[in-house]
Length: 225
Image (cartoon, rainbow, N blue to C red):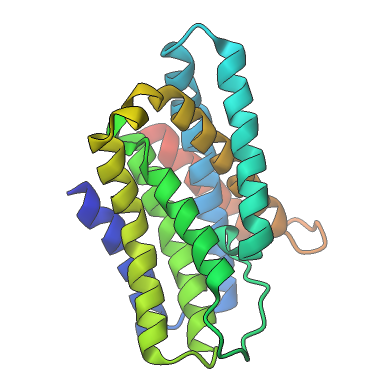
């Protein structure tokens, strides 16, 4: 079921682009909601979980910092795709290898700790994937890439997290260092979620719709997970 849900989240995001073609405003609100949800799950569930699994708190903190740095490096190649901003030229016919590599590595890594965590992590990733899939699909259909290239890109992106779940379950190394890997992903989530929330502001002005989306994301985490 986990594998199916992860693939379905990407598929749903892509289908929304083709079926209803969400506006930029709607996508920004979805990103704000997902960023708030991701941040809330990280703070309320993942952080307490990882700190109760060890007494070496400094090591956990170090891996969280490594996760933040790791995501910063990935974004130098993906140009911000993980938080909904793809700053690439759309007139190129060359396959975006760096974008694919960084997004795939990001998706794969966030799937690794799912098997060793509760459902909160899975739901956080699912909520995060839908708006990102919308942004990614929107970018791809405005490029000069062939339809085959676009669907191949989306398919491979969709299976990366399930692949991470599978290897995280079957390979002993990932189980042995589950706490460290989860801490690293916490760092990744902290980086992504805070950037989503801060970047979605225009000229640092108060936006009631954005604030409502953020509040809903936080409240949903508090009362349902």
